[in-house]
Length: 335
View 1: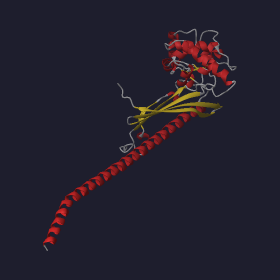
View 2 (view 1 turned 90 degrees about the vertical axis):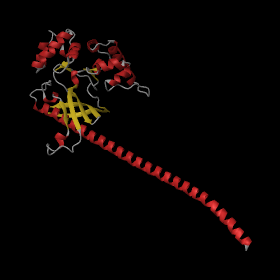
View 3 (view 1 turned 180 degrees about the vertical axis):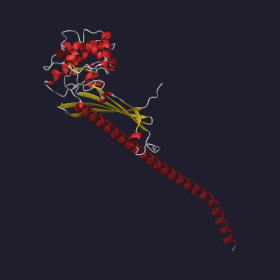
């Protein structure tokens, strides 16, 4: 009996000593489980938040693209109506297409009730149509047979002078185009690409600062074009008419602002005597235009730059999109 009691007491002591250890292990296991559950829950919440953000950004991108596409269609309609309503095929800065759209809140156009726009998106749209033929077309540097056009090289050299950069940029552009034309006769995997935008003139070895300085005054079109002297800025007028200095070019632009040239004959009278308009590639109408749309959503800005061609057929015209580029950036506050 005594021996039995002693065995029971030893067993009770061992059991009592084991219970605190078991309780500690159970508590540690519970803490590990809670940590794992919290980690998994946090991961699921983050993934859901990220999916919502991605979906929101994609929706905003798609909506912005639709809005800018609509703005481009509106610009095409304006250019078509201009060709239909014009008495003669002359393009100048007094026409409706040349009036820029100042930044306006988009909800004022979209809301059925313009007095109730509190729930409308905080979006602002602006845009402008510019005459691509108001600029010097780099393609003019080559004749139809691919040889250099020295007269047009002189125009580009004078344009470089007007913008304060070295005339070496003009020579580099011409040399690059001649080399590309020659290489295209025997195409291969190493044949250089022909630039299609002003920024791509850097492919021809033109320094970045020269490309930036020339950007407002040059363009790359698919075929040679005339300069529209009704829309050309002072620097392009100076470059195109070698008898002009910058002062005379400025007076020419000011005179034109009062009365645009309604024919090539009127333009001829405003230029030096015996000036050859055809040789200088000058005119008073245009077929190529640049359409710039700018959409501001909060701090984000999406810009679309489109090159379009208007093809006339009597009083009817069609406008085709040749090139389109979108640029996204952060809005820079005015300093």
